[in-house]
Amino acid sequence: MGKLLSLLARDESTCCTPQKYDVFLDFENAQPSDIERETFEAVQRVLKNSESILEEIQCYKGAGKEIREAISAPTEECQRKAYLTVAPLVAKLKRFYEFSLELERIVPKILGQLCSGNLSPTQHLETQQALVKQLAEILEFVLKFDEYKMKTPAIQNDFSYYRRTLTRASLTCQDNAEKDLVVGNELANRMSLFYAHATPMLRVLSHATITFLIDNEDIARENITETLGTMAKVCLRMLENPNLLAQFQREETQLFVLRVMVGLVILYDHVHPQGAFVKGSNVDVKGCVKLLKDQPPCKSEGLLNALRYTTKHLNEENTPKNIKNLLAA
Image 1 (cartoon, rainbow, N blue to C red):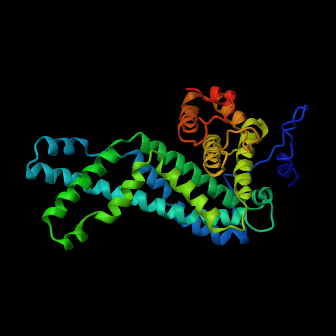
Image 2: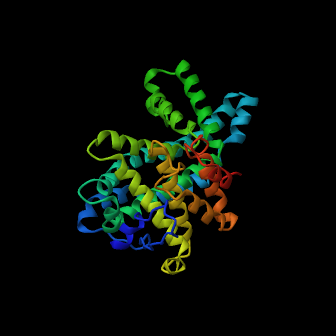
Image 3: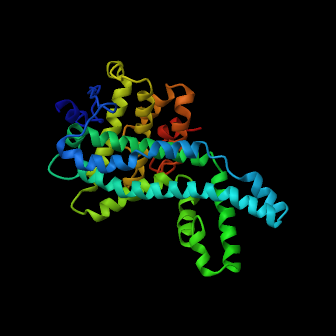
């Protein structure tokens, strides 16, 4: 425990070279304790679907050809063909949206366990590693989903076309016909707001975190931001230290920890009033960026872009110039 606690004790203003404390969070094999088990199992019931969600959005092809044909030659046959192609895609988009609601529901459960009670944030990280691992998995999912979404403009094109068909249908069909639709008007409006955001899952995650703070006034905001900042520092140390890197049993774990580190910086930046980039922040942004730049571009470029374009405070006046220069594209 002493190692992790002392991680935050280093004084950035000291003239001495800060000592580094090395801690290993077992992202590969952490198992829930009896205290964690109920929350862990509730979260796991949701997370078990995350891989299939990512596979579906990664392979999303869209109905661009059929939509273009229906617009250029708006015959009943072309429009029917386009609708039959779009409808199952909209069913997928509905599944993605419903999964985001599940994430929004479970995130407060994890935060409640990791940020409340008499333990300090750092003690929570040490004693509840199974829940820390699940939070890390949520962060990785959010980064991956939003990256795939940004690379797939067909998602919004398909959904926009579907909403136009709803408008036409509402002018010609009886009211009770909506029950036969893949997505009705009310749900379509909510989904449209979700997909309008460049990073919809990040918005859900940050909104769930801020809502948790509002609903739990007895939990200090610092508990959450310190937990996020500490996790980010531990990830950085694990990636910097060859001895800790050697403890990974799977090659892909290094990239997982890289993604989680970046996800923590981004979430911290959205939750903390001053963000992650100001001097005195509990996140070592400079160290994170330098580490990313030491990686091959195939591993780092997408993560650097996430820091450049999905954070909230990077371009503000209080962000030091050296940080802005480091992240300049």
